[in-house]
Image 1 (tube, one colour):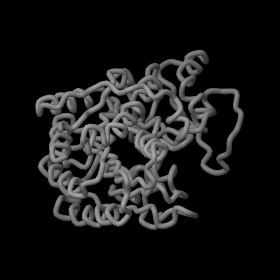
Image 2 (image 1 turned 120 degrees about the vertical axis):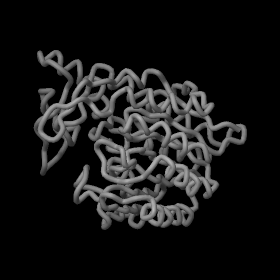
Image 3 (image 1 turned 90 degrees about the vertical axis):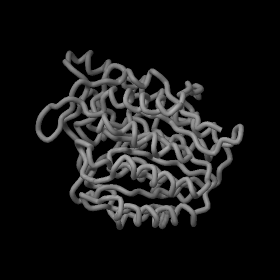
Length: 341
């Protein structure tokens, strides 16, 4: 059975022209050319994306706070109503004492519901984020149908930095968390999320940090040197019921496949030990040596070996696309990864 791939053209509409990076405004790295490259490579391998079913707001509301969702849907219009040029973006954040507040200005609300200045809200952001969530949900529901054991959600923009009530890192809705919660609502008792993006999935960790029905396992660049800096350290093991269900594997810059694969083996062993009903992969291709904003050293061929190690678990697996910004290579990396499924 061919691997089902889900994508909605509405995911292309989100397209901010610039972001604030290293002290200046630069072209937006998470641009629509990423998905063009991914689609081209997948179609060349014979994969045909299909439209997801519209599941509505209920699965999104099961993960994200209502006030945050209301903000996300209205932020751009409120920004324009305030007479602002460009896309909505924050500049002031509550570093300490963060608490729910009823504010009367869009500037304050952006600070309340975000954690960086690199994630602007454009006119079509909400529509693309909403379509993203439906794509991830469709991948989960495909598992088990017609002997399907794996599916790909071609999500764009990514989602793993988004928390229940905040955006950041190009992420607005946490697609993999929405998918995990949906799997539980459909009868799964245990879900494992394995995040192989270059950057730590801080939003996913945050959402499930005190829970034992979803284990979060992440291989990522050491946050002492790389974004998101404040989360993803090795001593973050969960809390309360979630203690021992959160596993971070920070990696030094320059890590190549010879070192990466041994850490991945440890992560795969944790997945196997958890005995989940379903595995969700937060897949990022920004671990490539050619990635313009990342510092690991994997090759496109390594992604085939990575996929083989994970596929050998023989678990129902939904692959949720996250980051990857080397446009010339990300399609090959993804197609190599999914081919083994």
